[in-house]
Image 1 (tube, rainbow, N blue to C red):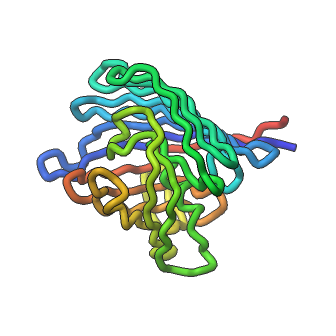
Image 2: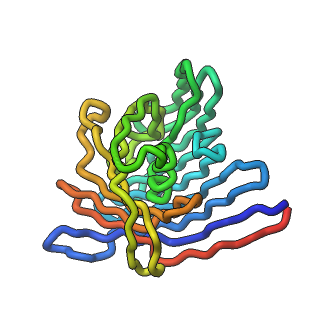
Length: 242
């Protein structure tokens, strides 16, 4: 039996006219697929835009990317913002966290079915989210309720706390993309139907991931007021014996 690790770097750039293609952040990640099907994602994320954000995430998931547990530590404007730990059970979701505004917080949310996804805001995780869409349906759109965020802020710059939400995934179809990390056969998705589920509607979001079981992030772009671009700059696949 072996485990398998994908290690990579994602570059954050701007598409605003006054700073076109200028670097505005970066993300270093490892995703380890263990022999029992568990996946463990570790991501260090840096956003340079003021106030700058530094986020460290360790997220354990089942084979279908549904969450098991997660820890998040967050710095905003070069100051500690908060840290927390979350656990996802069959009947409840629990969170123990501390942040500079509210101090120590305990949360417990009762659920009637297992949670399908936790978005802790690393960009690499956005591609894993697309596993929720049933490709057998072909191109189209599906709305997913009962999802959770660690922050409703578009930059993930608050909390961390449990925030229940839902949104839609649209599958556009297969594509071929050429990025810094190489040329890939890809699947093109869009994140839609965020209105009413977040304090502020998320701008249109297009994402491409590998057209295989890895769903490895390749590139993405956010329109609207954000005008940001994300691209896989390099990656490495490592096989390891257990």
